Length: 109
Ligand SMILES: [Zn+2]
Image (cartoon, rainbow, N blue to C red; front, side, top):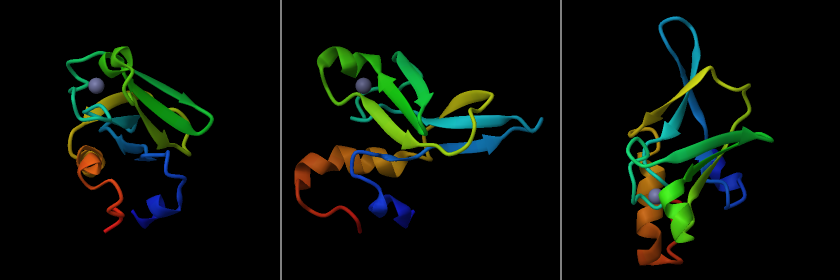
């Protein structure tokens, strides 16, 4: 979404949702940590939603002192459950992992 260009750069994107067959809202979290090093289904992570922002922290990266958490804006009330999505945030992970290669490349293509 173009909207991202308007956000402060420290926000990574927007938290996505889906509704399951029983009508319950399910928050979709990135399946990979921000640096793309770990699959969050296998590594430990912690998700916190507060002040209109969801933070998904990779505990392995946090131990390394790396940039360990996603910051995703959320406008909706908390979901009933959460699950991991590989596809939805793939672009974000890709952009992140390529960022060091072109530090000032713009990246808004
Ligand atoms: Zn990690």
